Length: 462
Image 1 (tube, rainbow, N blue to C red):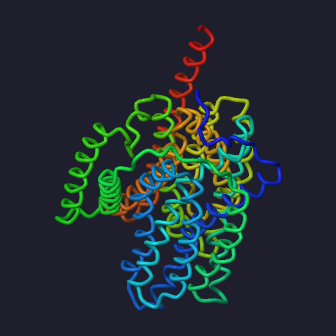
Image 2: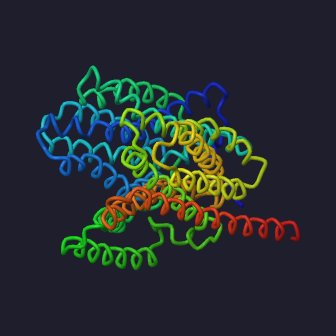
């Protein structure tokens, strides 16, 4: 199994490694916080901008849409010209877009600013894992992936709490202005300490990049409208299918493909990416359905919902560094299999809770969910990075980030469909769907473990 290309040719000093990792961590934290904080502020935005709930949701969806559409082309660009040369401009764009979001006085202006933010976030997330691989030595990569996962989980957990606290004394505009000092710190640290790695210099196919953006963007739109079977949805799916057909035909004939079809033919890599999609589909479905289940089915007050869900991201953040270290010495696929099985058990336990269940009865299975997800995440990311040839780390990094977003989008789409088919029991149905995703991911991890074991046996025999 090859190591990622992104390992720095000249190892960083311990101090430089810490500062470089802090810059990368701040970037992933801002991209994650920006999603969770904005979700919390949607009612305030709708009221102040004078628009309906259905309209203001576009502030979130356009951010996700642009991220999914542009992540692979931007990852390919980073591989061509170097990750540092993509990461630093993306930080500047994220800073400018955050100021634009904060200054927006109309919905169209806010959505345009969020699209720019999504473009910057796609570049940051597309470079994320490749940069972590460059910062840490091979034998310490699991630790770096664990720290990266912990930062993402902590940001996911803290976003709603931080947003709620800020909105009690400030307007929603400040949720975007708060990015400014963090961007400036990240820029200062990255400019001085981020590894300088040359790109491969290969040509970037602009036509393929456009088709890639259309194919993935229309796929996300189609998933989001899956519960609305009208002519517009049919048109989106039709155009999406055509875009995919043209993209795959072009990529098969291209010497510098953006969609890594050759890597997806590697069974361990493609299976690890599939496990990532399934796990984040379970997480995405659960995070959308749980507030409805806790409030409407279990009768919990809205103010209690965040506290009841909190054990999940808190346990995930606590466990991620340890699972990253364990993956340096143990089978990553085995850790993922056990972790996703625990996630499925926790979700099933939550879905079976009766109305009026005590707080501890809710928080314990939430903690189990967080334990399982934390056990899975870092080892899976490490496995993905070590399943590809040395010079393809940038593509693997982009595909990993894309797998997360696609999984979360797919999970949310299934939740919407559950509510369409059964408004009263939609949240419970959605959790059952999440259990199915988690179990499928665990089974796929078991198959991945078999493939990895055969690979080790073949290597030993040779």
